[in-house]
Image 1 (cartoon, rainbow, N blue to C red):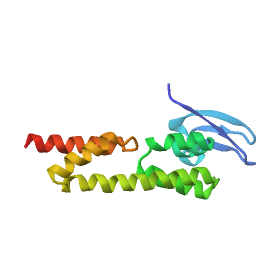
Image 2: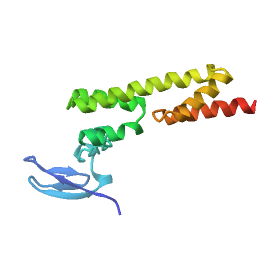
Image 3: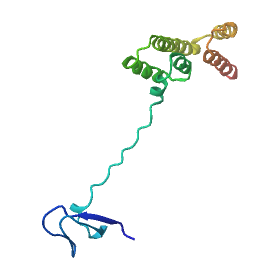
Length: 154
């Protein structure tokens, strides 16, 4: 069955739709194929819902919940989160934790980049030292082990 479109005559004269008349002030339903385009209702624009930004919802939490989530975020996400916090709440605890996380990531990246430049003896010493250091980043220890395994396989 074809879709039907209501046509209302808001004028003072008869309105003709195909071979049918619509008296002034009345509404009639017609098959879509018979209704001229200028009498059809305007198409309804469907607004796409933008998904909620997970970083924005993270900032809705309190300082300890935001700080606890920082290790799971990438550097880009940390930077964006910092910009959002600067524009919004400017909570000192969140901003300090973000700065510390970014600095730690930068230091770890530098250390990870230098691993391939270490000699075999330096690599073994660094691995031994990292194994006894309780503050050593797990990524750093994993990178040292991976480099050692790579060199042993050669």
